[in-house]
Image (cartoon, rainbow, N blue to C red; front, side, top):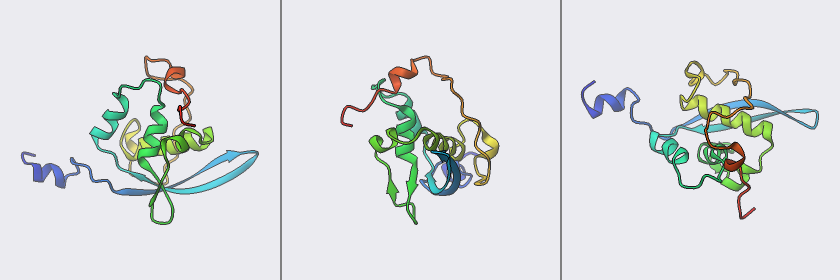
Length: 140
């Protein structure tokens, strides 16, 4: 590739296309099926989340609010505060799909809507304390 046109045609410049996904999460002994959309995020979107000046904010809640879309046409977005308040199992489901659709982590499943999400990881790869990143939003 040697031109912007070629990079764009090969998917090197991201459009904010929505990718329809579905999954199951558990709450109160019940299994809940959820259908949703994941917006493709550009490098700048992801970089902004990981390099912002607010270490007290939840990076996962920010990514969920940026990328997850609900409703029949994917026209409903969660606010940061709503994403922060999600059931942990549902938040992990959304987070796994955001990462997969955007090619962060597990490349093999990035375009397969039926792919099983990776098992939840209780650890953090960040050197900052996960407690510091997960501070409750001040306006909740």
